[in-house]
Image: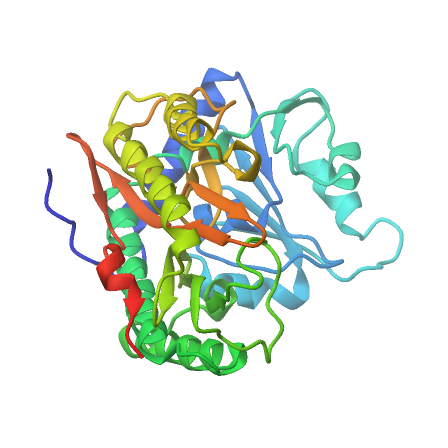
Amino acid sequence: MSAKPKPITDPPSAKEMAGRLANVRTLMAEHNLDYYVSFDPVNIYYLTNFANNVHERPFILVIPKEGTPKMVCPLLEMVHVMARALCELEYVNYYEVPSPEGENWYDIYPKLLGTNARVGVEAAMPLGISKVTPGEVVMVDIIDEVRLVKTDYEIGRSVHACDITKEGHLKLMEICRPGAAEIAIYGEVVRHMMGKVLTEIPNANLIVSKFIGAVWPPSISHDPHRVPTPYQLMEEGGPHVSIVTAQVDGYGMEVERTFFLGSMPDKCKKPFEVAMEARAKAYELAKPGAVLSDIDTAARKIIFDAGYGDYLLHRTGHGLGITGHEAPYVAIGDDRELVPGMIISIEPGIYKEGEGGFRHSDSVLITESGNINLTDVPDTLDDLIIPL
């Protein structure tokens, strides 16, 4: 197995940003596009290093097949974009929303494309922007496809983000005890991770820096997407399920564990073992050339064969990168193959009311020869029964 790559905290270079744009243009040529238009803040961040939150003043990135991309943005935000962007951009401003007739974004944006062009747009493009896009409009998610395989730089940034989540998880396991309140755990874990990030990346962009450190105690761990209440208390026994995620200056990773405080109830032994067996199978299969749906099918089969099929609520994993959830998906229905440079989660789970939730999740890099767990915090049962 390959060695774990070194963490990177530096911002992307001009060469890195140019390579991303070149990859987008390669796919534009394959689809015979004259322009590609992006509204999704995630994709705009990927291509420019500028992050924004969606509101009534849209940012629209127009990428011609040749020449400098154009950023349509409100006058209020132009200096903000210029301060963060790490690529060459031509700025096209509109004053405000609303604006006088002829001066709004929807008056200015269509003129950048002409009337006879073939224009690609994202599936997530708002209808309002699509409706005023002239020419032949083609829905195709080019930037999302380019993001599937990470560059060496992106891998290094992801390794650093994983190191932050590992620090957060170790802190969580240190302070989680029966009677501890959710809000106390969350506050200390988040402060710990954020403090480390701001020490190592002092100019981190907080729009794309988010931290979660929480625990689902046994009474709710069977319901994986229920949000615990702030003063929910940890309980003796288990299963508790931890969730530690960090988007570190634009790179999002996660680590999760099923653990027990004091002792493991007998009723938890079988589902814990079955979930771990499914996890091991996914790790075994996660290598270049493996079909994502096949991995999910194999992990699901273990859970179904053990009699827990009715308690399987989600796929085996998902992609990770500049967000915490993105393509590709380790799921039936995703028939793409794994490629070196992809980063996925591996997290098959079992959720049974009265017994609890059972899930480990890790951020996993696909290498030339197999995979590397980038969030290798303790994962054996001996390490996950916390003595009181």
